[in-house]
Length: 431
Image (cartoon, rainbow, N blue to C red; front, side, top):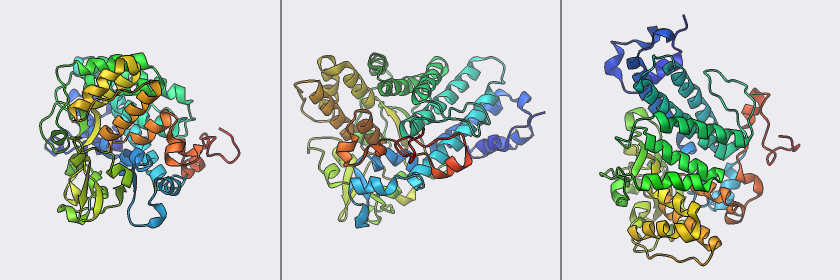
């Protein structure tokens, strides 16, 4: 009989579910005898894996190379251009550690999905599979936006798989999220995957795919959902009750090493911090005084400028925010265009304490959308891809076209003969 892999046991152990382990030693259960209770434990472990495997570099990458964040200290990398050119290369950790984390996590997510699929038919089985599909889609969204042509791995193995064209990867993400929308449970808590979380991620996916009508439709369905409403920024980012978070990883200390604020905070914070990265001067001045997001997004600690959304310092971890309702307002606005979308943009602005804007044409409207996304989603992992997908990155960052995609790590190319470097990074131009 096939035994549950060591990976699956690790999922159980890492989930903080010790009270169950003496009763149900997962490493002694064959795959064909998995029960719903075993599956519940493994899916709990999947939450743990999904939040920490990408590492800080994975979750923060789009901010670090998006032009709003630079390194502290060393003068050689304290501008966005120098930051990008020094950090993005086939052997740099900002490239290699997310690649390793995403694919290591995928193998484990796939293992859980394959084991849950062996359960007898039930509503709970479908809900657990919907959760797994959501995580697999979230991982692949983050992978394809970074590397474009990548292997699509759905089984427990998958080593040395060839790359798929970018459009095929997007279709796979769509199919996973459609399945999750149809099977995941209804929203009950911001820290649990729900049908609504899958709808939000699908709206984001359709935006990236250029399917604006579909993206707007899904975004509007969430805006009208009574479970959600725009909320005070402090309540969102300081642990208060709010109805804006659609899905966030709890990312509690004993189950994760993704300590966002340690990289952004200083010792003067009172909770410690390594202060590896800081906002640029432009980012520090982009909020108006009436903007209710300002004091939660940026701050001064002593003489140092800091990202302020994550406040745990060295003492603890902070949630990882995946989808919020404000993003749905911005997706709906962008996808409906100036005539129909301006109302949604201004609703968000007014709620955050700003005056409405009145762009004169579609180009100005898109500029206004991107500016609002910059203000709203600062530090949440959007800026680089927002600029890339709208064709603005090269000019905004002052870098060459190759930086609109990440290179495949050099080590992966040597280990997997089926992988090919992206043409923008390939010395011979091959794909």
